[in-house]
Amino acid sequence: MEKKIEMKTPLVEMDGDEMTRVIWAKVKEILIEPHVDLNTVYYDLGLKNREAAGDRVTTEAAEAIRKYGVGVKCATITPNAERVKEYDLTTMWKSPNGTIRAILDGTVFRSPIIVRGIVPFIPTWTKPITVARHAYGDIYKNTEIDVPEGGKVALAYTSEDGVRTETPIHAFDGTAGVVQGIHNTDASIRSFARSCMNFALDTRQDLWFATKDTISKTYDRRFRDIFETIYDEEYKDRFADAGTEFFYTLIDDAVARVIRSNGGFIWACKNYDGDVMSDMVATAYGSLAMMTSVLVSPEGHCEYEAAHGTVQRHYYKYLKGEPTSTNAVATIYAWAGALMKRGEKDGLARLSGFGAKMEVAAVKTIEDGIMTGDLFDLSNLERKRRVDTETFLLEVGQRLAAIV
Ligand code: NAP
Ligand code: MG
Image (cartoon, rainbow, N blue to C red; front, side, top):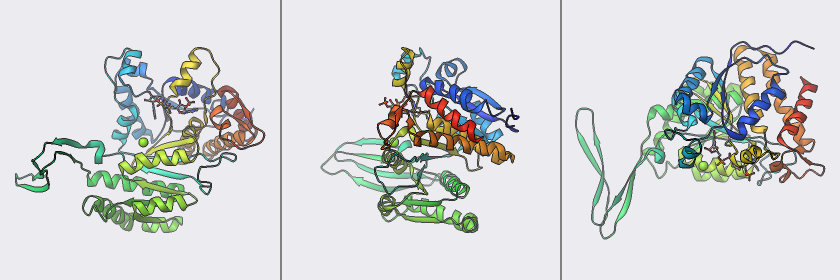
């Protein structure tokens, strides 16, 4: 047998919870370890270990990504009241993704995996639309108040040297109401813009950005100005060399153009737009199980994961010993993306090539008609077979072995 593919710098591996933790181990065992001399630094972000080690393990994993540059993460439980009981937690630990994102200051890019036989709800979307969500500020860090009838509300600003100015918002004459204060920072918007532009260059796709700056002449206008300035000053020439474009338009115009498009671009969205549009885009492509997700920091550190969660409902069936047909494709793509990026950063063409072949083998398996239950229900292939997770991975493994 030929020597296994070598790695140089380790990958930061972050294990997780429930069904995806089961799939995680199998993807490594069946697809990667037979071919790659896998070199990872391992962090167990499973909820049990987060309870034992505290959020420190999450912070350490994020620091390791900053050190090594590339990470791959399994889905993890974000505890709610039910999980606190289920896992007998001492505290409601914060979302690991939130913690990692805050440390890396990154932007999340979600893209659909397109296969023959699964037609998007918008059939002209033949190429992926990647949604990038600015995950800082706006209504997600708001302050809201109930306003009783008859009161007045103003925005108050106090400068560092103590000068206070007030700008009226509304006088609630004859009716009660509500008010919210939101903010964003130039630093965060700049990071977002750079992450998006780097990713567009990296993937050689056009970058679209949209706000409502005709109405929000200061707030949204700031986003537009920052994007346009950074593009003009730092990226214009590189975009021209890569044959890609930056395109700004109004959010309503963007929505209309997205629907009419064939895909194949990155859509940078403000926080709320990204929250809403990423769900719309994912649904339109058919399945949440076929969405990949990568967090890219402004310095170009990357963390790959599946966009879906831990698939709890399947896990409880698995625990009862029932066979599950959970889709492993997004997890395969997360590993594939991470290995490709690792290979690219370390100048290891064989490693990058292997990552690309993992994707090819997964797609080929589905296009050969072998798929998990979620895709079986969507696929219009005439000859198709519903298989359990392990069988699917073994089938991918055979196709992978044939091309490695
Ligand atoms: P989920 O795990 O994404 O699953 C929701 C439903 O979507 C599943 O019940 C299943 O539908 C379908 N589905 C998702 N992924 C699938 C796959 N790979 N194959 C087949 N079907 C798939 O979301 P959730 O149930 O709301 O969340 C479960 C846990 O995941 C929560 O504790 C949450 O905190 C965590 N979560 C983590 C992340 C992350 O780490 N990035 C993201 C989201 C959620 P059917 O049951 O109809 O088959
Ligand atoms: Mg959402």
